[in-house]
Amino acid sequence: MKKIHYCVGGKSLLITFDEKSAKVKSITADGAPVEPTAEEMPYIAGVISLALLTYETEVLHDDETGIITLERRETPWNAPARQMKNK
Image 1 (cartoon, rainbow, N blue to C red):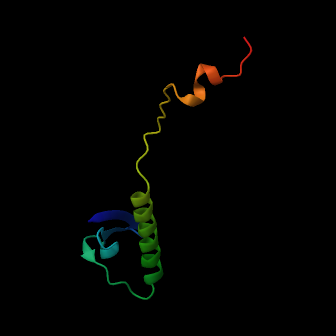
Image 2: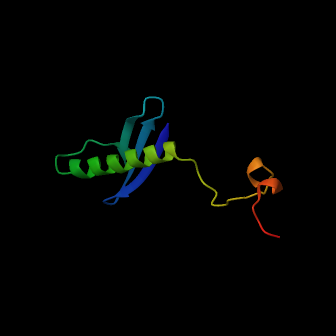
Image 3: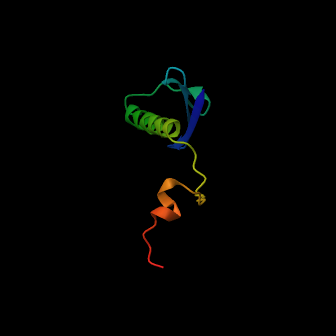
């Protein structure tokens, strides 16, 4: 289960996803199941949308270290015989 936490309108919302089916399993606000009113529904829908976006982004992309290591190695492309440099 993947859990994503948001603070919205003074409430702590926790959205739980079932990773196997990629569906929203549960939504709780301050630990209690959410039963939104018609007035709250646009906010809940927005939070679910953000959570889905976060879930999709995390699934598709690995965590990057921000470090790129380049090591020189000999290949046919950089062989001395293929270099066209005047010496």
